[in-house]
Length: 101
Image 1 (tube, rainbow, N blue to C red):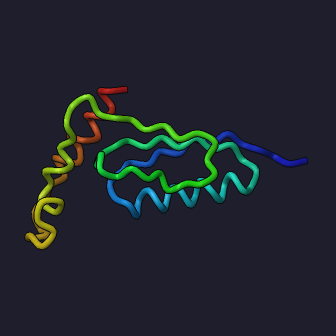
Image 2 (image 1 turned 120 degrees about the vertical axis):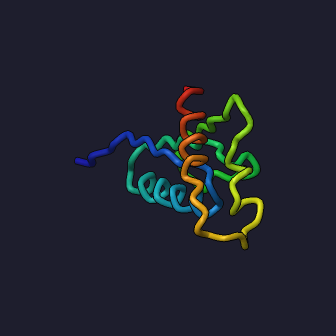
């Protein structure tokens, strides 16, 4: 008897590598016989890939407001001082998607 699960995966579109990582995990689970639904929150709307080839469903959550993620210092100037704490922007973007749901 094969045990097949329905799995929901959440993937914030923070960067290409994040999408690829979660997408590959989803592919492994699908190839293992599971049903996988991936939800992608579009932190960075410029990222259009989903990272998966086999997930049965992929849903993209768009924010009702422009994402603050693009304003983060490492996005604007990748060589800026890395010690700058921008966790408040991460929290703001996460809250933005929670409010939209």
